[in-house]
Image 1: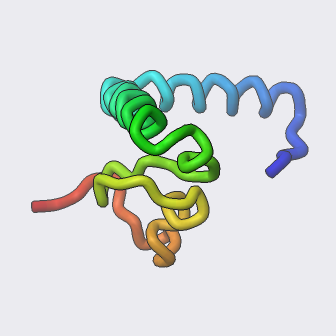
Image 2: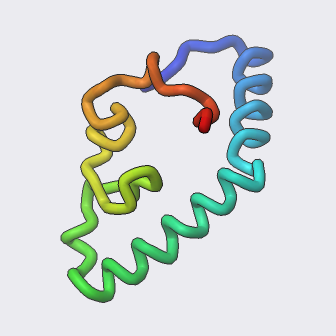
Length: 84
């Protein structure tokens, strides 16, 4: 999705996005995803992974649509932190 942002807003968004991507939790997930993708590509082939993301909650590869849409539940109800 393309956003129509002013130069100032675009720079602020870029800064926020980079900060979010560099948090320790996010970096751990990215590293885990990379390891899993490499292993799956070796086992099943690269074409098997096309259009799939690793779902850290379910522990498996899912379509991008399903993973980013919170398994069909949307993201509005998804909490930032899980409460035990």
